Image: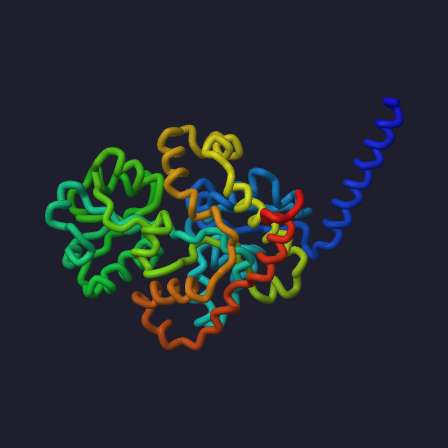
Length: 348
């Protein structure tokens, strides 16, 4: 009887291997390179690092060369120049590049809240009670033109303050941002992401004014839904490699579906120890603060895309008059097919 079971098991294993090989054979490009905009361990990349670390790309027949670049802009340049097949970064890049004649399409948007937090130095909280009070003040941002600056610029404009009436100082993200508050006195406020913000709020060194790490805060910040990080590629790459692009989307959608029910302990167990070993308590709390941004289906709405355009147009007014084909900047059909495979109604 045990021999029969062994034969049957071997048969099933053979079928599984043949199925995997057939799936891989259907990929136009089974080996792909992904240019990541910043450290993969950043909170805004949770869904991506889960897909990578849990080998969801490999399950789709893909071999991925994932390379971290110094910034989202550097990763974008690699994709546009053909040095990478796919980029990881902010959806807003699709809009900017299209206005410049470069066609890029999001394969899957996996972040719906940008995670930027505007906070005022605790010592200044009595005099800076709202966004309008930042007129003439010094605000720390990650870098000029970065999402942190776009975030606070549109908040100022919506509060009736010209964004140019504030001063912006580049302080980076992570430890350098925390140090800018702790060692300097020139900053009145800061816009940054986790874990820097959680570190500063836990130490009561800053007071949060606007928080886009969750649905309520994003509604306040943007007046509606928003789009943050995605995996994207040149539109001609997607057209030439439809099965490969679908496999990429499948991996990300599967990661988002997993994150819907995953606990913080589940996530910690699924990532390399170097992501959190410096301060596991801080990492855990940061995960909790940002997790809801990735617990969704990934379907892009026109309203969310338009809110992104409205935000970046504050600092780039030429975008307001640009003739953009916004639906061409994302492809919901890839996500819809992935959901049929990995959505809640799918059989696993």
